[in-house]
Image 1 (cartoon, rainbow, N blue to C red):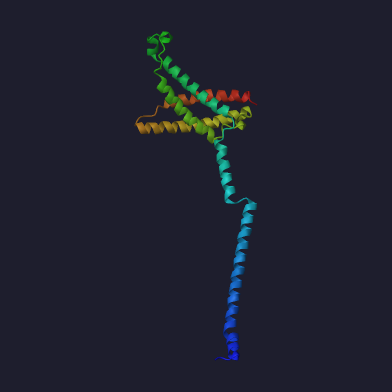
Image 2 (cartoon, rainbow, N blue to C red):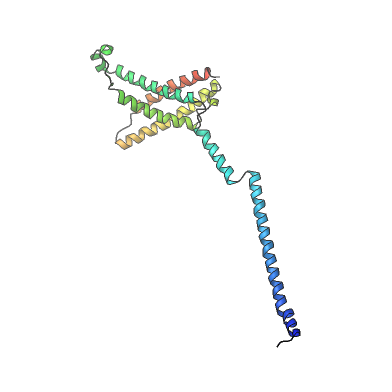
Length: 212
């Protein structure tokens, strides 16, 4: 049986130093964990205060995109669509009037069919012009009230939208020509762009005059 004195000596020489090292290691780990948690918390608070958190960035991106797809003036949108339709109808009317067969068949005295033969051309022309104009106007925020605030702003914005529209229309025509293995009708595209500028530009100018 071991006496109490050797047991005390064994405790003081071996066990006690091991306990001290263990306690020191645990305390250091706890302090390190608290320090890391404190640093993480401080960083989170700074991110929130500075507005650099991810949710804020997402909201900024959403508001940036909404500014381009928002139609603040729906009447501008409807007016542009109607103006493009009128331009398409005017071009179709000129095509008919310049066709000798129309006059040889009696001109305006001939009966009007239920479905005009020029209807497919009208639908195709109006669709291509509308699909080229709307992205051009949205990309330039063309349906905001600020675009018609003054005569100068109206003319400048309409001109910028029209230039973008011309690029899109020419690109679409080149794509169709490449897909169908045909040549682009440059004169027809130029005529379409001219009539769109005339009708849509006139509408936007008059609309701006009566809505200020």
